[in-house]
Image (cartoon, rainbow, N blue to C red; front, top):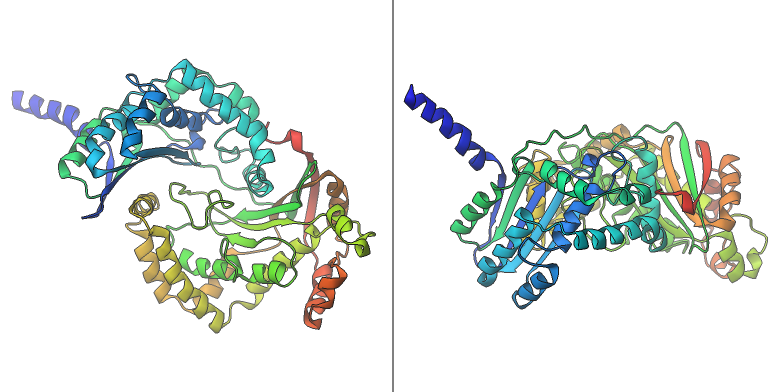
Length: 514
């Protein structure tokens, strides 16, 4: 009986410590930088109602604040000679802390990094400073710094309205203002625990370091969080448009999307990647949309499509890690096209136009997707795009930090190594599989669309969309004279292409993300 009690006590006290975290290892002999990633399965979906942005605030206080023994200034002073760095990111379903340091300074840096996670100060000064920055972002920065990013976040607000996926990870003006330091401490204890933690390590690290890391992270709080159900994108009925009317914009930024019932966890995702890349790979100049909208017609900077979330597309040329999601959607990004006022100021011959390029650009892009669904890719386009992707995805993991991140994301999706598995899946694809996936997952009749545009453009654009009025392309005389006849003929067809517009609503800039 005593032996049985001893065994039960052992299981109760020891097993939680050794099974709490999942471990992802990436040994890189000879690589001098050691990378540690800590992925917590929480994300902004765990933000309490009325306190949206709390998870992001907790993580930022950890990464931008002090520990119980060192202030933030003291930490910066100590790690500067090491050239060490660390950062925090949060998305809808996970939060990730990333640490990087040369192996010669691993022990010294780890002593500090460990305390950031296990013993954050959560001081009043750190709280006030970080909260102020976050409040400024949701109130001002997101609306002023990039209309492309603004329209993208507004689309998620529209598409996921009423769910825990709706709000920006940074929250809203009212919700961030409502967060207290007590909320921060409680949320940390509840959702940053050893039972929802995956630890990743990459580089030429000693095995005793990994053991120390695992043992130390077992010291995190032990509640097993009950995670909320993940919000799903709603199915729009027709094309529903929200126009955000803003003073002195640099054009009309358009983001459109619809629910997509597939993620990386499904092998068919590889087929959809080929079609998506052909339409418009992010920040690449060979996509169909880029070619027709920017190169041929000189309308804007770039035009792309996406079959999963793309973090900070305005700055990142390649997909980022740490943003895995189970709730997915297709999206179309038209980087700002010109408004009527802009065109009239530049070209006297356009002095009588009522609406700028947004309506025409939407029609052109949606029509291209429609034709892809109906006609499919050609064998030549399929082979060229598939072969490009097999090379391109290898660029995703140019550093051990990126490779480790993709390995950890792979685990989220139930895969072992997404990048290597993807190469195999792409290699097995044929044209019929790609065209079948396009017909199965893509459509153009039911979309949510957000347009951030100038005050002068909002009402005319709304009226043009609602009436499905013909929207002829407005060229300067110089540009029009240089275009071939087939382009002008296509323009006439695009201008009359009927969009399944259901609703159009104008929203004042000051009324978003409240």
